[in-house]
Image (cartoon, rainbow over all chains, first blue to last red; front, side, top):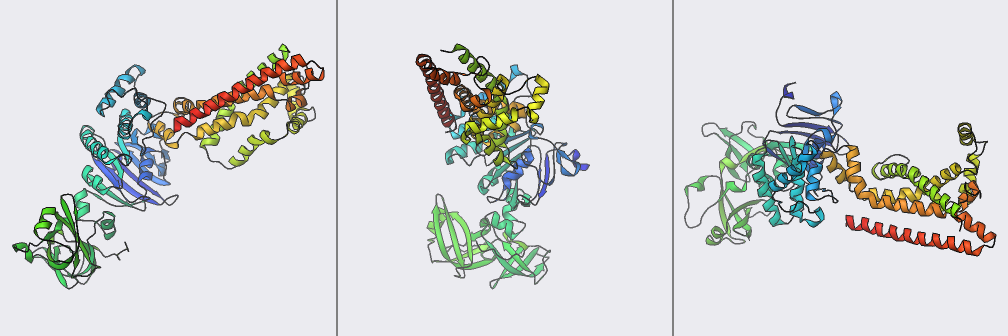
Length: 376
Length: 222
């Protein structure tokens, strides 16, 4: 078997019941993979299957060459034999044990005499010096999360699994914990799988983002690739990309490495994509960063690149940025969203109902297989 | 005061607890953590002694212990004597009528342990046994202690079933409750009063203790 020596985590799960699953995940050592999807998409189930708490009707899971699950061969190791560190969403700390006791419980592989020292080291690693003898009930949410992390690392696991680890704490603590995990993972040479429904969190923390929909892994790749080049309109919607439209391919321009598409009376240039033949119906997406606002007072060279006219539907200032929605050609059903720094919005006098011209960067226009728009 | 009766009651309570508690821990744990067909039926069967008239339970035990039934004959063949009107018969009856008092408090206690705690233990590398000893039992101990106290109190106090299957043989089946009845019948009010006061005090203490422990469970999971 070729992947028997494959380092890192490699899993494939399939089942029809109790929830349909068709998921494949690869995560290398030292890599963090974020499993992203709406609630009920099966994220936690997949994590539990990796840990051995659930068993799929068909599947295979291997980590660093150790076979954990192979339903075809009748192999299914119990959680105890898998060496997976799991941080539960609500931490699941043992309430009758101190922070140190919680960590020591996962140090069964060490001689008894060494466990206390190692537990202290681990708690120091997650910045809990001085809290060792406190029970979970006497710790804050953020501190409990750190104990859970220390306990998950205690086994020296071959893979670290984080189930929505930042969802049960307040915003400030969340930021802090995210930063700490980002620091911590530099020291960890193991695959880390993070389950989250927070796209920003996934994009900020993970090397690889894996989009899950109804138990099916649709696309995996670096966050920027998914956000700029989603594999389908469905992925684009799940990644919260709002600028998804339908168009028709006009033709290819090999000289300029472009594909031209027809959309609402505009001819747009897009990054070349030979997969779609002229006349084909396509879905296309442009990330907010690919939309450039034309300044009123000083027209620039970029104006010739896919200019689109419209009126401003909404201009909402959120902190340092302004979130702009343009109604293309004034049509309320064709909305184009992007953000500009708040001072740019102010200087350009952007306000509701005002006329505006934007450019769609050709390199940002990404074509996808046509898919009927789902009512949102 | 019938000290022989008190000693017998305590002996009966001791053996009942010794045999019933380990069995009840297994059963209550299974009822709390496992989902299996017929689970509701088993729960109803265990709760039955709560509502069944003691004389009815006693009657069926008598029939079961009798020389005409299979269990009765098996015991007679093995022990060389009948189960009826013996301490062994009484012990078996005591175990049966104490089932709900031993199992129900422990089942509630095990049910109070969240499933993710046991899963966290497994993922931490603890075996099923280690999880039981280090996580489940320490968290469920107020329930186990409640079960113990209730079983002892109930064993000391049970009258109907004891009279039916044990009769009133001094040193063999005459427990404290039977002795009280016996003394009242003999117009020995002083002895009856002493023994009654003893059982009253013990029952009061037992109930107080159970309440205390139940509150502990509540606060621990709160």
